[in-house]
View 1 (cartoon, rainbow, N blue to C red):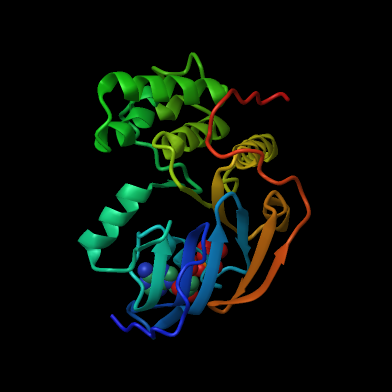
View 2 (view 1 turned 120 degrees about the vertical axis):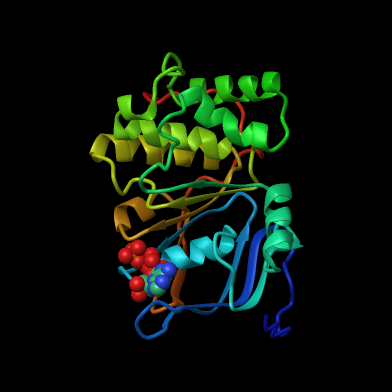
Length: 256
Ligand SMILES: Nc1ncnc2c1ncn2[C@@H]1O[C@H](COP(=O)(O)OP(=O)(O)OP(=O)(O)O)[C@@H](O)[C@H]1O
């Protein structure tokens, strides 16, 4: 891959640092320049929303950061480690540093119970069954899902499914939580609950990078990046409480 080598590398405390990140999609029509030389730093504890019109390249940017797609050029660091290499090296960094992802349509495994969906990433990461169960139990309690452990995803509301997906994304205590339109398929109550939960995890130090086309959803973040035609058009830090302490612990109550 091309390495422009022009940047300065990640500053201290950067969870995401990208320099000149570029991605062109080659479908069956003309090439689409989805991300065009993006420089981006997300510091530990930030809640950043990337917003912009359909086709602006928001999801492609999120996929590049999350290792779901590989950049054509540019450099990417996750928690200080280069993460833009060939597939094996990229996955090794992402596994070590930990990235959790929530998608618009939850992407739960339909034939696994809630408990198994949430425990699966912990078991894949090498946790023993007891540790995986303890992590799952704590998170489901925090997310108001105690009693739903044995349900299959299809028996849950959209809001409940997204909370299960959130538990799954957080079970390995990732350095970074990526959220792609996390409220996009929910009714207004489900959307409000999920955004409130994201806000509370953020208040406890969770770093979050969220993509949304919706300005109201974006306002849950404390920094809003406007993306247009593959580039950052605006980057605004909003007011709001600073994270109180790192780590995701304690009990969240939806009705607070
Ligand atoms: N795998 C792909 N193959 C070809 N073109 C793609 C691919 N993925 C995305 N694109 C194109 O790249 C551009 C950016 O897409 P992307 O999904 O990143 O934008 P977006 O801002 O997230 O849009 P939306 O809000 O509609 O999801 C669009 O023109 C899209 O059609």
